[in-house]
Image 1 (spheres, one colour):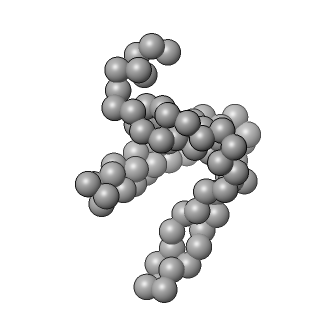
Image 2 (cartoon, rainbow, N blue to C red):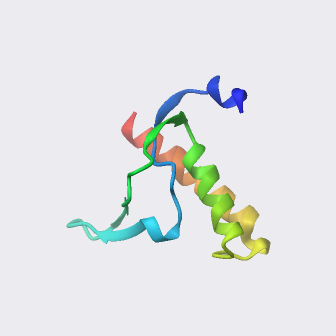
Length: 87
């Protein structure tokens, strides 16, 4: 996976899956996602956790394979929006 080394590096959870993610209501009335179980945290390629979450979700049958393309698009769009929000 040396091609990942050439991408911008960031801190990665590296164990992102449904049971490690929770929605929490914020005071403004919207929700934020909170991750738990940071035992495997480390440096990785930007977007690595997003790709892993999609793959694990399909592997564990958390989502239907027919929904994979829509889920991937939603995840990528939201990930990029989050990056934009924090600069």
